[in-house]
Amino acid sequence: MLIDIEPKKETIVRAGETLQILCTAPQEQLRVCRVEIPGEGSIVLTGSDPPSEDGNIEYYGKGLHSGECGVRIAKVKESYDGTFKCSLTTTNARQESTASLNIIVTKPPEYVEIFTNSGSLGGNTFRKGERLEINCKAKSGRPAANLSLYLDNERNVVETRVNTDLPVVAMKNATRNLDWTDNGKIIRCIAYHIALDRPIEQTKPLEVYYPPQAQPTFERFGYIIGRQGIINVTVYAHPRPRFTWRVNNERIEEGHPDESNRLETSTAVDLGKGAWSVILTIDSVQKSDTEKEYMLMATNNEGSNEYRIVLSTSPEPAGVDLDAGSIIGIVVGVLVLVLIIFLVIFARATGRWCFAARRRGDEETAGDVGAGSEAHITPGDEDEDQEDPHIIDEKVPQGGQENPIHTSTEYVNGRTDVKDTKKDEKTDTPV
Image 1: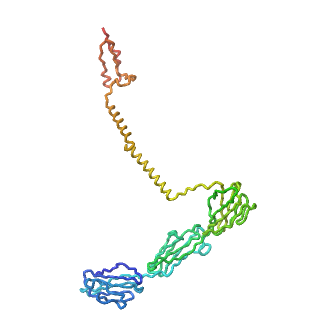
Image 2: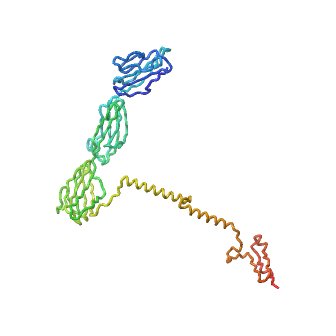
């Protein structure tokens, strides 16, 4: 006998929640309804019995006569995690028929751990270009927790390689080739679980060493002759580099003035994550200051780089950055222009709107030309200056009688060796 059980698949429930399970023998009446709940043992239900002593377990269904054997659990306990069984005996059978269902009583993970491989500089300190391997685990969760890896607030920045869910351990492994922009970011492993009101998070800082990064020439505008001028440059390097200015051929160490005391450099200010602000102050800008060559050298244990700075008294050129409204306006304008061009081409091709009169004129002209082509063309309509040598022109003398025009039958038959009839024929003269 086939027993139908609802829910059909394993069910996940929190401790303290209500759970109802119904086993049915279709088109049968039951003599015995017995259920086995993990941690409670075997229980026979009749449909008319009161609930258990603690009121937590009672019969659920329309009655044994309807073939239904169900149980209602008011508050699920952690001990109920396991396999539930219902055994039914019909009135016309002596053996039980059984169905089962897996109950998972949720249990939150105890904690989350993050492990990384050791960098070349020890611990979680790496160099640019090195490979980072991350292992994230959430233990003792039931079912296994769902894990997500982040680098700062960016998800999926780390390439996922393996995601393993064991019965009590959720684990996710990932790898990444580090760039200088990864310095100072935070590795975040977050565990999500049905038994948690809020996710559990574990973090680990990431440190990446890299040399000063190349940048294009710095152009500084708006300097006013006779006033103080400030040159501010931001350099990206980790660890902190040593800075040296070079103005033409004079070298100025950071935090010191030049020989004339007109120029003074500041000590680099840490802006965080490997960004350093370096300032060179000009006491009173002269025209010659805008013609000098300014170079800034930055050096740390990973390498060095030079940065060129150009000064100008001209105002800073207007930028080309567009806001959302400007971009939308441009797009709409382009679409309108395309639509106008399409309508003009369509109207011209079909003779509509402003091209309608022109089309009627073309049709009338075409009609006139067609009518003229059907007219009979007589020899007199041709150009008199163009004479056909095969046409015999007979002129009628004044007061004389018109002579008939004789044409050669050989010419009519397509012969080209036509004789000159004017030599053979006689001309009638008037009497």
